Amino acid sequence: MPTLRLATRGSAQAVTQAEFVVERLGADGIDATLVIVETHGDRTQATNVPLHTIGGQGVFVKEVQTAVIDGRADVAVHSAKDLPTETDSRLTIGAYTERRDPADALIGRPLDELSAGATVATGSVRRRAQLALARPDLSFVELRGNIHTRLERIPEDGSIVMAVAALQVLGLTDRIAERLDTDRFVPAIGQGCVALECRVDDDATRAALAHIDHAPTRGAVEVERAYLGELGSGCSLPVGAYADAVRLTTFLATDDARIAHREVVERSGDHPADLAAARAAAHAARERVDAG
Image 1: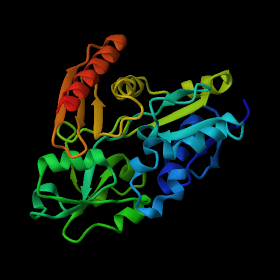
Image 2 (image 1 turned 60 degrees about the vertical axis):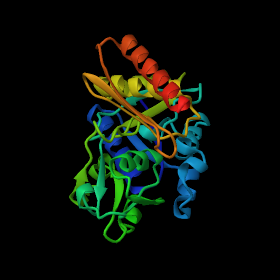
Image 3 (image 1 turned 60 degrees about the horizontal axis):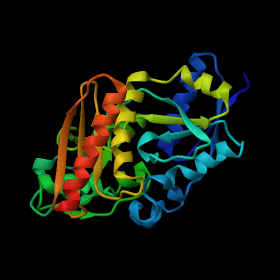
Image 4 (image 1 turned 90 degrees about the vertical axis):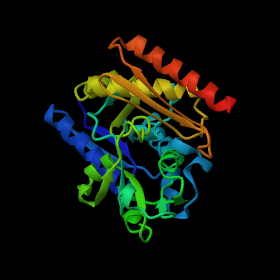
């Protein structure tokens, strides 16, 4: 089989996680190389413009997908949490890598050690909403940039919020002040794993990616994505969902977090039933938030 070309963003995290994919494929005798692509999200990293105002999840994936569609690459490598529920019909998710720790973490001070009115920096409306529910006294400021840039912007006597998995990829978990429990601080959909897209009609690449597809992760993330899909691809409200082996935990709130809905749904182990339960949970959450 010819060498697979993996399209990826050029950030340190993106390149490192793509290199892990190269290693995994190599362990199965499949050669792969990287094709670096700059995305709209990367070009606006230094502006501190909130992601949800410039396109949300999709700002980090469209150009990477285009590289595969137009034939410059065979595989698009994404952080699964960046991948919208509605993707190009010419592409399919050929593999999900085994999930790392899906939780968020505080860098700086632990939650209980933040003084009244302390500042927390994060670009995520979901993280702001959940932290505001736990600590209504906190102040929030926008945070963008690559991981190392963000680590340099910890507010004085405050904290920033980051995904544990991102820190694991770069070997920076020693910076964690507190890992936030996923039952209380529900992660982003797909957080902690990598999604690999290829062309629907590229049977050889699909077969290659099947070697590294992690079935438990795929099952969990597909349930989470079913929840988000029911809310609608244009949903910009604070939303999270995390499925483990036995349950799906979801979160949806209004922009100001005045109304929030957290729900735990038991998983049956039957994939269609799990998907239906996720969609029903999303429908109920949206009705409750909209009614408020």
